Length: 205
Image (cartoon, rainbow, N blue to C red; front, side):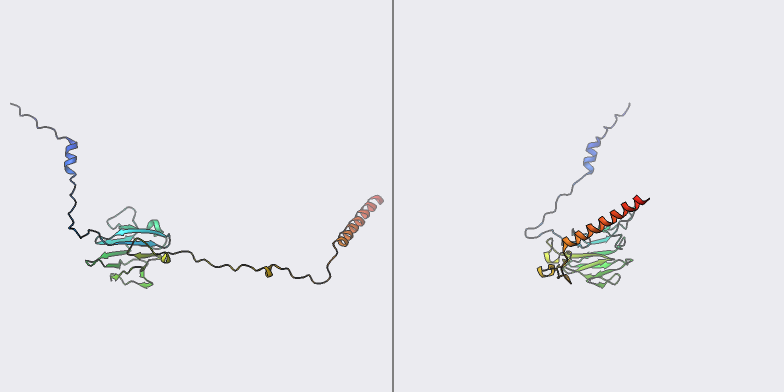
């Protein structure tokens, strides 16, 4: 007696069973699940990155091909390579009290906070408005999405002193004012004499 073949599983139902979605966590009333958000304002390109730090975040450049050391924030589109950013340059760490610490990851060109060089593997607390330098790439850190207009990096406008009407006045010519008619008549006579001399020399030949 031949045993009956088991039913062939439906690939669609199998795929659907494997894709189990987690139900959203229930947040008690009055509490939020929002992690601290910060804005990174890249001064070289005047672009902004709005990020949320869950635990830690690594800033650097993506390697080719990508490896396990790929940073979370790739600064290559912001001239990271040209400005000396290492592949794993800086790490931002969030503490339980939501303080953000910055650590230099032994980068080649170093990291600076407000002009002071950061010592390797020593955390530095970030404050709103602090300026980070990754190599020569300047990033200003804000703990809000809206950046004050006064803090935006803009080109310095150099005031141009306009000339006054007095500076446009021409100085008087030295000596007597030449007579334009007499000058033109003299030039005409000289030209006529030269023309007559040429004709006379041609006739003698």
